[in-house]
Length: 254
Ligand code: MLT
Image 1 (spheres, helix red, strand yellow):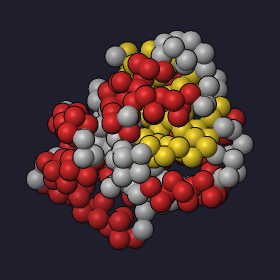
Image 2: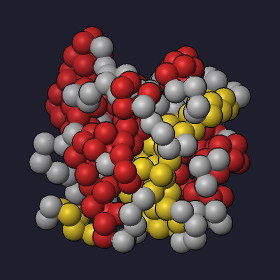
Image 3: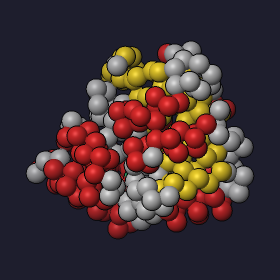
């Protein structure tokens, strides 16, 4: 991992490939950059692949008042540091919320968007309340609250489940609680998404139990020019369950 300082905090990232267009792979909740490992290796011949750990995850430090917009600004600072102007952003689940926040504030820097197992909607009031309660439980009881609830829903593929579980075990309760609150407070991205003019790929497992495939279909209806790639049989971790298919989908953004 390499580390930069942004706003006096360490932001860690891994870079592979270094050829072609910059592709930022943004991890979901409560994971870190390593969830992209196999897919990133397949894309290294096509892109300059940059994989940050979002603040509070992996080896990146937490920030004050984290938000999806704050995470997006951290990615812009990382691109500045690397002298990269425009980049393709592909975000998995929560990483998709971050990529959509980036599209809101830095549209001119977005060369393409991959929305992987994600959605463009904000939380319902019930979902929001649930996130706040889970954040409190994580701080009171521990991260097992989230790990035990999410593990069986990530995927029916044992290898993917084990890999996600190992990554989740490495995360800090404070970072997990921060991200839960930040996701609860995120804005709806329907307008910004439906007005995108850059190439867009919506990739989603047909058997996703955390964010149903229907959300991908709804996004495609909002932006008919987007490529909708269904990954048959995959759950919420298509980058681990079907790395070849995941990489092929993202190559459409080359
Ligand atoms: C994720 O995988 O990042 C989360 O499930 C997203 C969410 O909870 O909305």
